[in-house]
Image 1 (cartoon, rainbow over the protein chains, first blue to last red):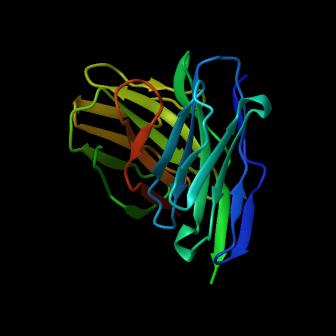
Image 2: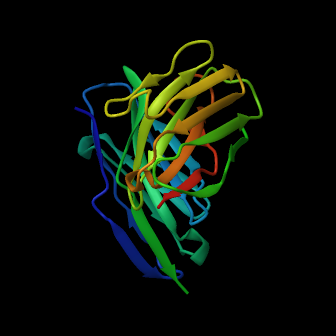
Length: 114
Length: 116
């Protein structure tokens, strides 16, 4: 069965620290997509990244980077030099080719202290 | 990209009443999705709304409680009927980003309902 696990319920760091949010997934499909979404206090969900199962290259976008490892079924998200504006709930999600509906993780609340 | 507007953004409702949430998209989309996010929780899909057909509901959600309309390709409504405090949640409307069924979604800002 498909499943997304975000074991970290809440993380609190001081501004400028690096922080990694973990995401572990389960799926039987060989073709699937992985996502990260950000939900700031305002409530709107913001798409951050999509990665398909055939592309294991790590991606960097500014201070954000993603490490996709099929061997461990993980898709971790790192914020470098964190800022207060990064404070939000971050969701990891999975969609399978056979059923494109998103399977959501429980979310990790990230608190960046000034 | 798609811009999604939801109304109301928040409301406080009395037990036993019903409230209709509107979702307007700035482009034509085939499928629209309604999610519920209970306080401190992740997102749960309520139903998928296709234009011209009845909505498809997920397990645990029924049409009598959450009737959905989809009169055209840019608009949908979700009604939360006979509300109870357990219905206090954020209700989110979303659409697919590319139409390629990859799961990448755009979201509205959500409608935060509090039921007293």
